[in-house]
Amino acid sequence: MPLRFFLIALLSVIAVVSGYFYAPWCAYCHTFEPIWHEVGAELKSMGSSVNVGKIDSTVHTSIASEFNIRGYPTIKLFKGELSFDYKGPRTKDAIIEFTNRVSGPVVRKLSSVQLFQHVMSRHDLIFVYIGGESLLKKEYYKAATEYIVHTYFFTASEEVLPKAVTLQDVPAVAVFKDRTYYLYNGKMYYLQCITLVSEHLKLIGIDYQFGFMDGNEYINGLIMGEVEMPSIIVLNMTIDGYCLPESKIETIEDLLRFLNSVLDGRAKLLGGNGFLQHSKRSLYKAKSTVVSMFQAAPFFSCFVFGLPVGIVGLVIWGTCTAVPADDEKPVEGATASPVLDARGKKPIELQPNSTEKNEEAKKED
Image (cartoon, rainbow, N blue to C red):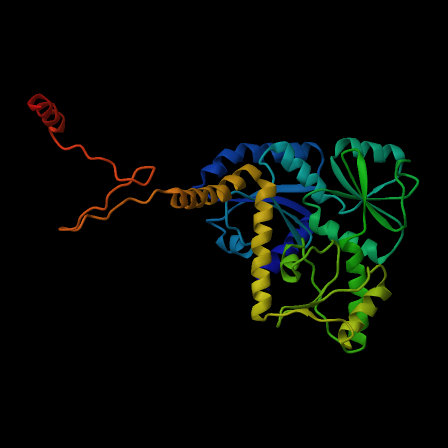
């Protein structure tokens, strides 16, 4: 039996184990050691079912390798066949809160208005599923199993919810934060659509690959525009082509209709990886980068783009307004042309001692 499966089987018998991997040479581990002892003592005094321990990774190297330990100290909580990594602050209260949250049920039930108000007063963010059995509930439980390390997940009936909460439809998922709520109809709704559609396409012998992208930055660069979220788009990765639905997809039938239009060629294939498309995408990315820079830091962006423009402007202005220097030298043997006055007559040049000669001539007379 592989070591990992043996450890998982052993941990499953012990129920819930919270342990941390350390190395004797790690200074952070020595600092963390008293805090870890406090965590174990308090959990024991609370009657918690969590068993607290530690593993020396330099001695049990195979175990550390099986669980991919890369840094110290590493805190893990083992619950059945699942393991959860703790990445929060290394304080006693934070670790105990994480342990109590993860070791308990993945989804907790809020059975009364008082209990709902008590939970709201203690937590900044909670997710609540309202409704009976559905595909949405299955996806909700899957998401809760993955994200229980971050926050709490609950179920409740409509009667337990605050009076200010108005549901458009049931089942639904509500997110409560900052004394308000948001109805969630995004990712998990599309997941339940995709689940049914993928099963349908398998039955008729067509294989689609479905994926989810957190954000629309890549798609915006591909289509050179803004895509609303959530949206569904069909990509042809070999040629960078794409197909967009002509109308908003609101039901599973709408999604099937759109995918069938792609298969039979009725949906227009856009994009491509030609030279013109590459050039357009490069210009769009450059434009988007400049716009995002000005939105994030307008003054700094003005300085970055204004400085070279100002320098070039000064150079052009100096070149256009400069007075040309007279670099011509007189040629030997050439006579300078006479300079005329304002009336066009040659001015009388006074020779040296001309005044003295005139006075002598008057005396002789």
